[in-house]
Image (cartoon, rainbow, N blue to C red; front, side, top):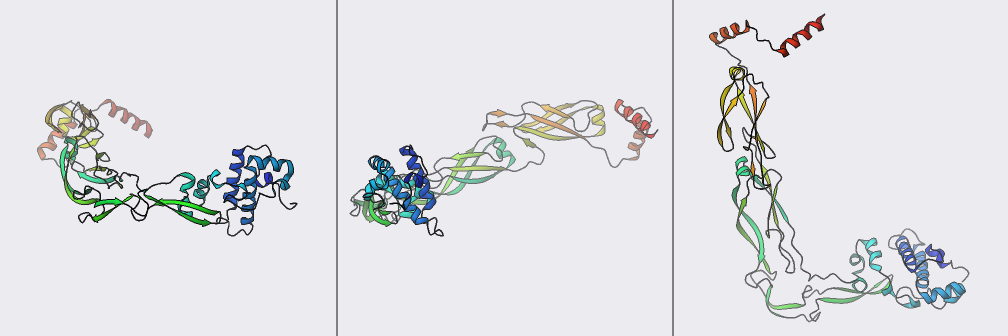
Length: 383
């Protein structure tokens, strides 16, 4: 007994540690020294067994009292003899190994075939909803602004009409699992013997088999069809907006409902209108005389032409708001405005008569406050 370390020291806890603290400490030691994770450390297996032995004593109230009073001699007949199979009073059902194995291998079932007797089982018979599908759809500028109806072909998976989704005919109880849908097997591991419960391989967890397989769906219960789908797209959608089409995604399993189809819109640009959210911008060209003298200008909007008053002395870049002529967005229940941005164009070529008129105009005083201020700055800068 003299060569054995103190059990509290092995687990790294104090003698006043609670049951939960002892359990937590053993969990950490098990992760640290598990042989499958420490293959390069020759002492890992011994340290792992040492932690097992310490936990088997300290987790048992009666054994812990005997150990506290008499040391290793008080538990020499029970500790360290049997591991995790109930020997030495260590009952595997008292400890949740699933968490430890999940941390080792990313899931208990991948390493040891599952530990359903310790933490419940995941049955394949549970209905599972199908995954959603994302599909991009191109729209013209007008289709997005005013809404439209789109028709397109889509592969959808639906319940087989022939067998009503069962996959076969004349059902009978599975003889392998006796209708439970699960089978239990025993596995030997380095930790001892464990029971593993999983879906029945003969009925795939359904608990029943069919005497005749459906020839229409080949026993799957669902069939893929190519259907013509009609979608009503609301007015006002924009690039990046998504619309859900219920039940047109990937098929569910074990009777689960289909996922949904999400349409993501990509809207093309317009030759003249520029859209920002629900507002519309339009660049309107002006001649020099229109800008100087002002005018009545007919401009296009989303809803037809309107006549706009251009004020005398309009500069290039000035904006004028036309209320309520933006996008009437059913998708977000909002209506935008329209902004006219004026751009004054200077002619590149003039006729002789036009040049003569401009020359005469140049002889008059056309200076503005801004021009005069700038000329004064130029003069000061040259002094």
